[in-house]
Length: 637
Image (cartoon, rainbow, N blue to C red; front, side, top):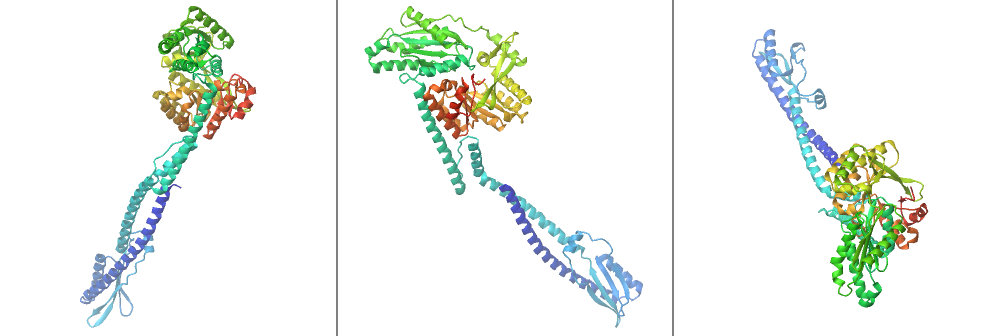
């Protein structure tokens, strides 16, 4: 029972006891006073009437008329005259109903006033004995009205005291509710602090809770920093800070085999002409500075371009993967311009002939060896052009180009005409036998032949045309429709551009509120780069979805681990680790150590960890031993 209810009950009991005591004292005192007054009135009236009758002739009719007149005017219960011999001479008795107070009240508080008595004389002889009693209904009426007035004041006082007490209790217990809300937030994997109240007893509780949250966040930050250092160690080149060869190749495999990006993209290769000679001419320290400077320029080329990554392939070779730039010429020109303007002028005075740049295009599921063979050939052609030159392979694998308006028509018709579909892929548990949920990936029927485009093929253009919100909303409707006729849970993706759309969030909330039974079976995922690009909007959206009963996760997690400490405020249900860490996990001890630490820290705050891009079921036991709760990928389907 709440404190407010207990307060009202206590006030009610106190008021009832106070009212009972006050009423008892008040009514008894008033009854005693009124009873005395009634008795005095009876005596006075009896004496006065007896005197008046003594002076009259004792004619029976005259006596009876006098008694009747007195009875009708004086509100008596009875007037009775009895002769000395005991004969009843005259009697008048009240025969009506008592008014002014309930019968039960009169029975509860009886009034007993002695009747007035007097003798009537007839000359020197006694005519008779007069006895009268005034009616007591007016006494009961006065007592009843006083009781009602007292009750009204006690009720008013109780309401005022209860209202003031309620406000006071709410004010006093507000810090306690804050502590409860903080505890609930911790249970929901959100670590928030509260203001310390003025009440000393509650201040110590709030301070203890805040200290615990601070220690948890500190532990999370320290562990995240340690894992970030380990991630850099196993995924980055020590000199340039770019991705290591293994990590770059793993990321390239994911782009070629996955569906996160468009089906076509570009690979740019930068080769230094003679690194050994540079080391001899500049010295190792200055040559390392040259390489680090080049690495910085190549790394910055990916700012604002999802998926673009630079890595060191060999000692003198660097690769830049551009999945969001289908045109190799455009990608090569951008890298060449950056190198020529930001890097070459600082080093051309010591080595005027420094580099070659080449670019080739690729298509999804192209064999990795074939892609690198074409890149080696393009690099050789760049070398034939001369130093500090660029060569672009004519992309025979380019996608069919569509004008923006044609894309707009296609995407609009896809939403309105039902040309969007969901393809379902299982996410299994550590043993590989049980399904955790299914991933619902969007597909677009592009033409009359039924050819399907994956999300990476059309969602970038949808983002460019500001059409991601209606597409995402339609995807949710498709998932709800499937869940209404099938068992299990479904996870759907929300675009990075959509989560900051206030109108979309309102429409999504209204849609989900219409299906409260479906929400616990519906999971929402957002790519990691989208989460940190609009973190506050994602945080608000995540809390709204969780209040509706849905679960929320981050997909392709691990590329921006330096900001992972923000996860403590999100209350996530799960994360899906980027495939570049998972592919070839059996042969990569560094990634194993990193992923084990990631699983430990995620489990410490109640977050499930799922592996993406699993190539074989043979990897499942190893992933389970590292702490993964589930897995999905081409080897699971």
